[in-house]
Image 1 (cartoon, rainbow, N blue to C red):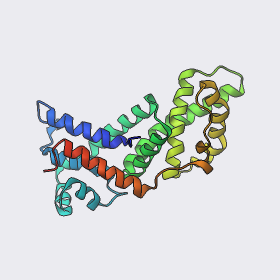
Image 2: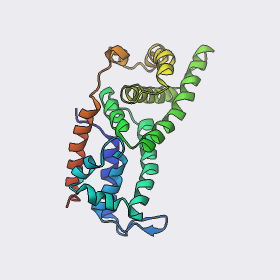
Image 3: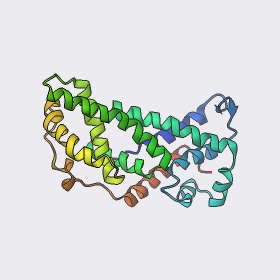
Length: 235
């Protein structure tokens, strides 16, 4: 199965949109004044923090000093800040509206764990603010014998699988609630109600397997290089 990394997909789409736009890209009413390669490099900064700048420079085919110089330019910094808001919304929309295979949730979660700290925190927080009250709502309705809506069950399943995978790569204070409250809710209520596949053993902590982050990073670097090469921005 091909690996699935959402920021890599979003980045390629954003660069292509910039390159095919009939008018220069503006942010906050001002032209950003960046070449496609600089624009791609600005979007790549989302991976900086958990990955060294040298990792990004190598993918972009740049010297680390060139990248450091670009990071001082106003347009470059503006794109960096803008991209966090845009991607966080894209990420939320994809996780809320689409179903993925269990292995794909691990790819998505692994990439998320490699993103710059403020971006990954923003992305996780936006989804957690949906997932937590939804889980409590389903638990309460079940307790009081009230019907459970199909949309709520489906949405819970999507977010549950994401957070289950994310805890593998980026443990949080949510782990206890997930284990004690939401795994039983998913296994005993949501999966039977949806008529989904039988509860797989790999959903439980002892059976969970995902690639190590260094392996995710290596695969991701290759896919980013491939995407940027296809867009012809690495020159």
